[in-house]
Length: 254
Image: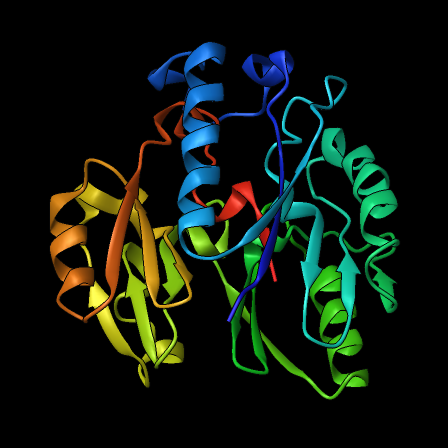
């Protein structure tokens, strides 16, 4: 169960954020602010107490707080983003987290890792090797986890930006899968909820206390997740999609 979440209000510099989806256009800042508030309200409706951090204009992508820290039940690991322009975000977030958590650990050069590449399944953490997360970073992360009695393993990515771009764990052994992960033997032991490539953006959804928040506009995903018995909430995050960001990227949940 989650009880709290941390989010950061988008700054006006959001329109200059990193993107491999230029064809979707530039984010509309006014719409992004409205969507972000609706996202916060959805988390609140799931019973979470929300800490809202001020915008950080010097880092356009800083509203995607998930990438800079991994909060586990036993330690908090500050990452080292593969996108060099985002590394200063770690320092900003460290100041927030060091007042709340005792066991802070750090990924060091030459390792790189973004927590969008990390999926928690109980005490096991799957770590995607991607353009943003290298083997050195993954090995450092797993070594830290092991010191705290946790486990981890790596997954080589072929197409998606982050591991959780194409996968979402919904607890109770249920896993939303899309694209390259559908036939991956690594995940064969899960009860898979397969969604079509046409709705691949919805593969990034979040379980919050027996609710599942999905992006709005993906009816097949909504139907399939609802069929598992979870209460499904829809939130429009289309402006963040333009920056390759999904629902999980926008909060640290713990």
